[in-house]
Image (cartoon, rainbow, N blue to C red):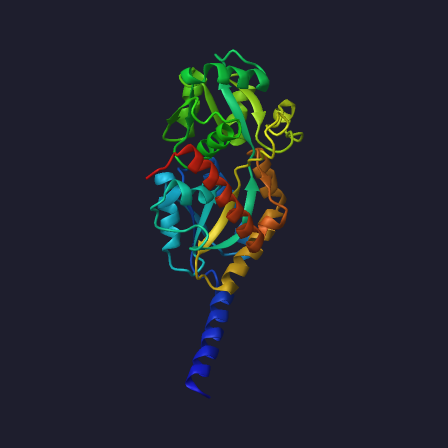
Length: 328
């Protein structure tokens, strides 16, 4: 047998054996945000749901690598050994980084293997209880009349609330009318909205539902294409598309990624386990309790996931460039 052919055959056999024995050590889910936040909870719930389909002894741990709008975690995973044992769980900010951070050290579309989407989390547009508006129509009119005096809070560049605020302002052509205030996390931003120190915020239902229910903030609309009819509290609030923002449909999706070059046999094993997890009744229930909807369409496949993120990168670049808000 020729040496080159022998080497190729041995390499194929070695890869197959490796995949068969995968995982051979603990798998780490790297999360770009602090423990206890929405993305952290999604990762921990997913870790539990994927343990069994990966093998009874599979051990999955969550590592929080917060900072720099998620790019610390993204860089860590992009540079990790591509053996399937270091994975990234990130939300829509993954698609925004290429525009927000023009000098970042990884490319979302080139430096990762796409394993599949996990969920969609709706967003709510909120205002302080001090605002003289109770419906979305009144709210938008109030912003237009008083925009120069008002401010919009978000949880930091690249956060879900930052992206939502940018997209809404861009859609209603209010980009320059409010002062944007960046906080170090959702908690401080929400506290100041509740206290009336800031006027407007757009954030995930996982963070806003309790505050709305308690009457600490005013809710004006949801960011999904249709009303959230399945949500007992938010079903009566209109969608922004319903309010005239054509094609406005924003959810904070989460996805699972491996470093580029991870063997196909390993990525298939990981995606197979993900598919089982996405159908796990307990996982679905826990996501619904967070206000999230588990993905059931083609985005849960690696190909569908990549196609979707590619479109999101292009869409967000348009919005970020128009706003001129960059992190570098």
